Amino acid sequence: MRDPEPHFLEPLLGIVFDLDGTLVLSHHDFGRMRAEVVRLAERSGVTPGHLSVDDPIHKIVEAAREELRTSGAPDAVFYRFEAEYQHRVDAIELEALPRTTPRSGAGDLLATLSGRGFRLGLLTRSSEEFARRALLRTGLDPYFRYLRSRSAPGPAKPSPEALLLLLKDMGVPLDRALYVGDHLLDAECATRAQVRFYGILPDPSDSAAATMTADRFLAGGASAVAPDLPELARQLNVAKAPTP
Image (tube, one colour):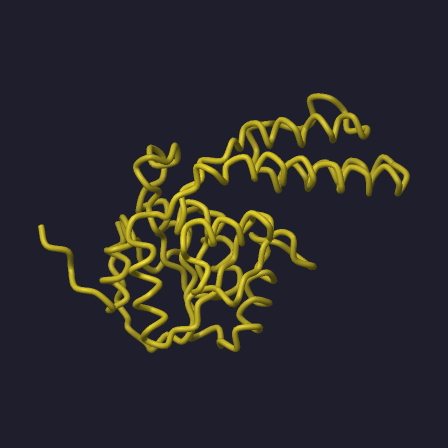
């Protein structure tokens, strides 16, 4: 088993964070989102039963697009599906806003990193509207001048291009960048972009907490894993270890 502690302290210039689960807790109804995407895809002509509600949303969408293309669906049908599923997912996502809270230690960590001159960015699969409103609601908005969401033009996470485009905006070279996230999709995005990745284990209130482990993160390419944000601050050398 690999050691989840970092073994290097090269000078970082920029740190990119995932949003939901990493910095804020929103408890989205992902099951409902996935079911709605499948329903809209089938209504657009995808064969019933070809899509699984157990797959991540981006995988469902990719499979639906591929089948619509290969079946020769008219452009109008293809574009209508794109617009409808995005509108529906956005609407369900916003329903979680009133229950969105900052993850413990998020404000202190970001304030410390910002005060020490790190360039901070946010890369999320949330919509631009949800991301901005969630940051405002949780008081984390002052720290994120640089943000890239699924609403941005071009590829979305887990495409490595999404991270590369954000780092370019931030003016941060790949070898001086770090991406922090709570999901294997985050690890996939970072490793494919050849950017250092630190995993943060899901909050105990998150349903993913029962299945996500440090070993899974390390196997997915993480250079280090932290159980929470205060420990991440210690690993980044911007805080002392918490008192037992």
